[in-house]
Length: 176
Image 1 (cartoon, rainbow, N blue to C red):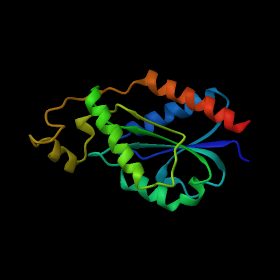
Image 2: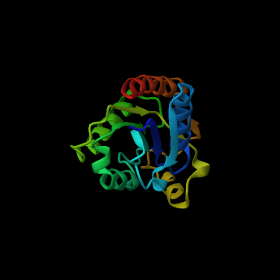
Image 3: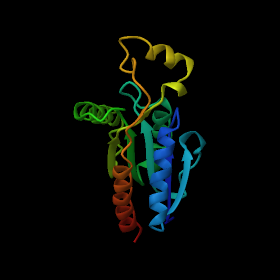
Image 4: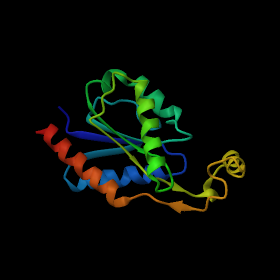
């Protein structure tokens, strides 16, 4: 069995990629062999014994690239350890976090065969200057949850590293 772990992610504005890099760095510090790559670059999962998938929530949904990845790799993912981290709300708010967790559960319901060994939701980051034209227009609408929202980064790096340490413990156990 391979001892290689994949940390793969979908990112639109870079935040999920940054979190994936921190998770990978934390795992490497525990002497685990890690590959990190965007989901769009993954063509084969056979080399990995565990896969960590990172995804944002956009309007309560995972991006289509995550769904395509899960469907395309069902047979392999069914036999490997899979963990999922999701960047959810951009505000530190218990109600929004609970809602994001419900959204993740709803997304997972589409894949009854997928039983992640771990799943977590972290708060995210928002930078209106990085939005593409379409999202800038939407953010200017008074009905938008992003309306008049300033640049903010509420990612809890301590919690992210703590989760990665916990994953390292689990992955080391599986490896031995």
